[in-house]
Image (cartoon, rainbow, N blue to C red; front, side, top):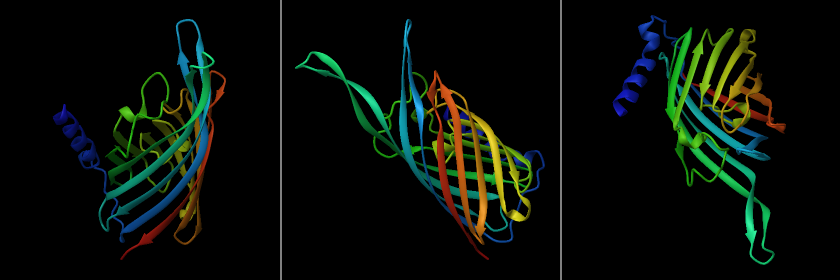
Length: 254
């Protein structure tokens, strides 16, 4: 199994070379530092044989990232830290009243995601992993697959990064406010590197249902950029909406 994952990783990372895509080699190295914050809610659904229980779980999150694009190289290295907290109802039995009471408990989740990508002009592929800090199973995202159970990160871009392109994201979003486990987006870049806009669909934990995602990235001043993004969705009548903001600064080398 390890040999299979290793072979798949090597094949995917070399795919731009195999299909003959010309690597994009910038004249200068670029280091990007980003901080992000968001909040929203997801549906915690428990589906039984005869009934269904559902709760709207509010959450807030914070993320920071650093990545480096090497001079005259298509390779980018990066790392992302994600902190997530939510208010989850739990059932507690009261031995004095002999009744079950509902209490609200704050739960937390944090991890880092190192990654590497091979970026060409018309195509990009990236892979990485997820490493948890502290307890990884404290947060419950429903009856089915948990994000904690999938430690891999993936990214694919088809088309030029400075024009219209398609991108697919697997567990690599900086925040859940940008999308769930899997996200597919169309990205539209503004002329003269003034910013970009994306729209797309997502699915998978932490959300129970599919949703619509969108975001706007604007170049404010020289190497400073701001992001705003959000998600719209629901499941079983429970809101699964989110909104977030980000700030990025680029350090250009020589």
